[in-house]
Amino acid sequence: LWTPARIVDDAVQKIRDQVGTDKVLLGLSGGVDSSVTAALLHKAIGDQLTCVFVDNGLLRLNEGDQVMDMFSSSMGVKVIRADAEERFLRNLKGISDPEQKRKVIGNTFIDVFDEEAVRITDVNWLAQGTIYPDVIESAASKTGNAHVIKSHHNVGGLPETMKLKLVEPLRELFKDEVRRIGLELGLPYDMVYRHPFPGPGLGVRILGEVQKEYADILRRADAIFLEELHRADFYHKTSQAFAVFLPVKSVGVVGDTRRYEWVIALRAVETVDFMTARWAHLPYELLETVSNRIINEISGVSRVTYDVSSKPPATIEWE
Ligand code: XMP
Image (cartoon, rainbow, N blue to C red; front, side, top):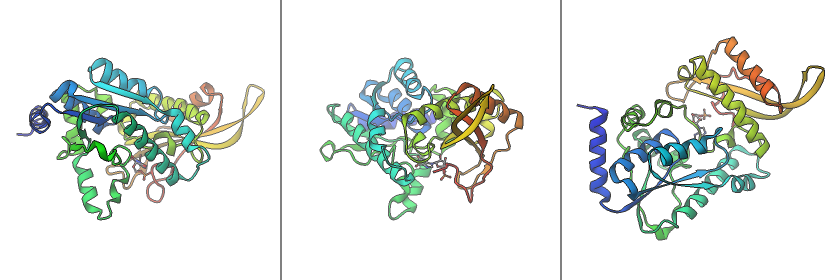
C-alpha cells in the first residue's frame, strides 16, 4: 500500500544502504524537489549531509533568509549559504539576450557551487532532486538537451577530481508524491505547494539587462502580488503567478506631481502541465488592490499592467 510514511521509510533505508557512513553534498535551491531531497537525506543520514545554497541575488523577497531559517535554524540541516549576488550581477552586466542570460546564470551557479563544494572534505556523493518526470524527459532527448530546464539545479560541472557518485532518492516519484512525502517529513504546506520558480529566477523576469535596482523593485512588486493572492485565496487557484519588470518608463501622477517611472506587468496562469496555459481570470477587485498597492508602495513604479496572453502562443515567462 502506498502511503507517504512508507515511501519515506523505504527511501530512508535505501539511502542508508547506499551511502553508508559517507558524506553527501546537495545543492539546495529552496524549490520543492531539492527541499524534499534535503529533508529526506537529513532524516536518513543527519550530519553526513551538507547542503550548498547559492544566493544569486535573483531570488524572491527574503527567500534566502527563509531557506536558511527553515533548513538551518529549524531543522538543523548543515547548510552553507554562498552569497553571490554581486558576482551574478557583475557577470550579467551588459547582457540582454534571454538565452545568453540563462547561460551566464547557469555557469556562474556552477562556478560558485563548485568553489563551495571543493572546500568540503571527503565527500563521496552528490545528491540531486531528480524526479521521475525529469528522468523521462532526459531519456526522451537523445541530445541530452532536455535537462536544460533543470540544468541550473542539476550540477553537471563538478571538478573531475571530486568524482562524486549520484544519489537521487526521488527518482521514481511523481511531483504529487514528492509533495506528499514533503509534508510527511514536516515541511510546511506553503513550501511544498509553492508555485514553480525558474532556475534563472528574476533574471528572466527583468526584461533585458539585469540591474540591482530593477531586481529590488521587482522583488517588492512580486511580494505584494503574491501576498494579495494568498489573502484573496487565489494563490492555490493559479498554477503560477509573478510580477515582471519592464524596463520602460511611463508617466504617472501623484497628487499634483508628475512622475516618470518603471512599469510592472503581472502574470498569472492556470495550467496542468505548463506546456499550455490559460491566463488566469483573476477578479478585477483583486487586480485593483494589487495595482494600487504596487504603485503606492513602490516609488519607482508608475504603472501596472496585466498579461492576458495564453500559451501558446505566449510562453509563461516573458523571456
Ligand atoms: P515557459 O515560459 O517556457 O515556462 O512557458 C514553462 C515553465 O518552465 C519554467 N521555466 C524555467 N524553469 N529554468 C527553469 O528552471 C528556465 O530557464 C525556465 N524557463 C521557464 C517557467 O517558470 C514555467 O513554469
